[in-house]
Length: 140
Image (cartoon, helix red, strand yellow):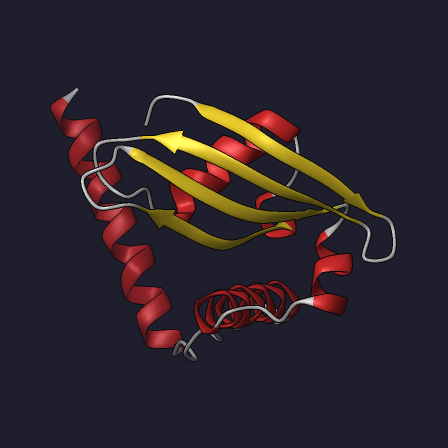
């Protein structure tokens, strides 16, 4: 995609949004993500606050018309326009991951209890250490 040319920009105070009509020159039809990136750069807004209403092209033309709404905040967008299924699923997954991280942080690490050691085992280990010391003394 080459450049974004704004045809008209209407400030809608009731809905707290800018209604944008623009054109883009491209070899193939641009997808919503590419158009959102261009609008984010141009208007310095959040991607969640932008809604692409349509990308229209004519047969054999490299110029595509774009209709978009840019809301002041993502909350304003939620009040007026519903999220798509993909956006809702992504939001659910993000919340689930966040909850799992909180649960993991809240739960204490499992306490591992040592197995009871018998006195015989302790004495055997002490004897082995004594024998190793004797061997080291003899080698020196």
